[in-house]
Length: 178
Image 1 (cartoon, one colour):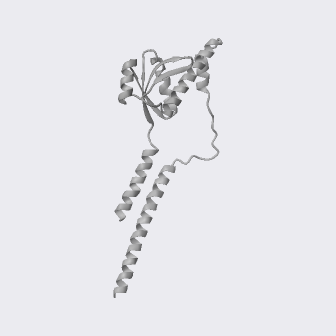
Image 2 (image 1 turned 90 degrees about the vertical axis):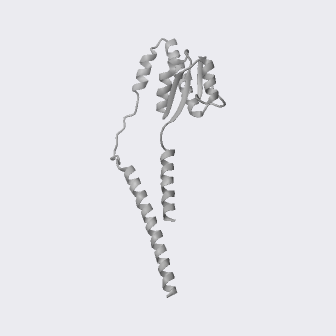
């Protein structure tokens, strides 16, 4: 019984590690006309904790790879501020968000150029924008370790209680039999 409980606790801890873990990966095919957006796809994906794996494909090869499941989507072109994408059944929300951000960035650059501005200067200024944080308290650098130790102590306390209850019950049975 005790070993079963320990296995259950370890399984729960492993599940939490798995759920909270690593970034999602999406596989996107870009045609020769859309290859220029590769770096932008990757950088926006990184900001959203999504790894974007990009490969160059022809439209027909990309469609075959989408059908076989090797690619999540193929970006075939852009028109009127819209990115044209081919998917098997449905575009995932995460990939839709990344592609929408890329399309918005492209339209923004076009509009800045159309108005006589310099898109690279605007992109640099936007890239330098950020937040300056002043911490009034100290950062707890040992928070994760404390959580881990608390979990171990809790499990050990539970196991000790189970053992002591079992021993007490066994002692009562022996006393009654005498």
